[in-house]
Length: 168
Image (cartoon, rainbow, N blue to C red):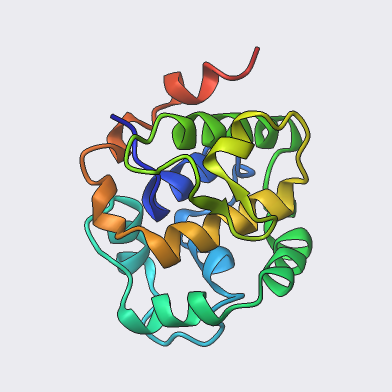
């Protein structure tokens, strides 16, 4: 079974990041729009979150719940999307669609793209997307609604082989 959580989301995005973007740099970029000055954010925390061995604090979840989706989308457009290889970003988006579609815990009418209001069901019929909006929306959903440790048994399945299945 596949599970969407912050870890599976972030690991997929790391696979499309430019070569010089570290795990911590990506983690920092993803979290900055909801919590810009977190003194606890460090490489060890990023590693534990990427491995689904740590849940977000209640404080971070509350900040994500209060975050304005348009502001997060704008930030992703300017600061997050440029971190990715454009060709690989398309692959990551397709892999995220697959991850969401095959997550049996997410019900069809659950809004999984907070920025656009798209449900799991409506995502399955979409053929066009705006990367920064989709990524910001799924990011917000993954932090707000899914305990990160839910992906503990699945994050290791986000392999290069899985990622590359969507390249053709």
